[in-house]
Image (cartoon, rainbow, N blue to C red):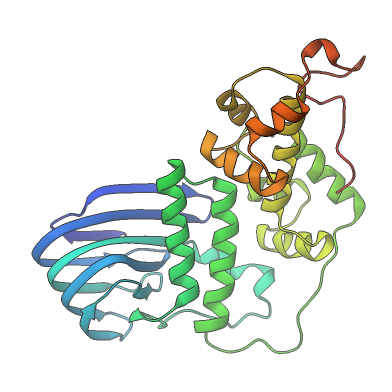
Length: 310
């Protein structure tokens, strides 16, 4: 399987975060008079210029796409899997980010019937607000929180895959959309697994395997059954575990964030505020109770007090 992503001279400050089905990369380039290179990877690639650009850009791809023009902030480019992209830039000074997607994401049942393809769908420096906004938000979160939560990355990959095939894919599907529903036993098995692994990484692919579904079908079915995504469910479970810990324990915010599976204390604080409407420290001040105040039989981590049904 061919892989080449070589742009010279190399950008600086390169950061990369991976999850099942995707990879986020970002870097910046100080002013450089001339840049040349080749991209040939087995994944679909969405590239966004976050800041700066180039006075002149030339692109030639093996799938027939060509482009000559400038590069500018907010410009979006798409490179299909296994499509070689050769480029030359002049007068470059920019910050960029990209998300690569495993083509297997598009082969899932959620995209039935077969026939939607991104082969030959390459483009360069287009206006694509949805793609630009999603990649820019990933860059913002990575900078603010020091990383990207893998469950967030997986959910983002499915959203990107859906958008790409519907906006740029060939051949519209025949017939209306299929609907699925998760039976109660599958919902309960997922909930039990999430509750037992809140302090560790929880992958959407693992949840899907747990109930015998593909990741794409689980994502669609879970949302249609419960009205929310698996990622939102995991985040809600983690916040409610954190609430019980804040009420009953005296650990630091960093310790609570770690034990509840958040990527960083800032990630924990942001999600907690979105659910509770206040910072974790404020919640503890209003609701905290020392360990001596715990009800009989209740474990300090809250496991003796189960959340309600999904």
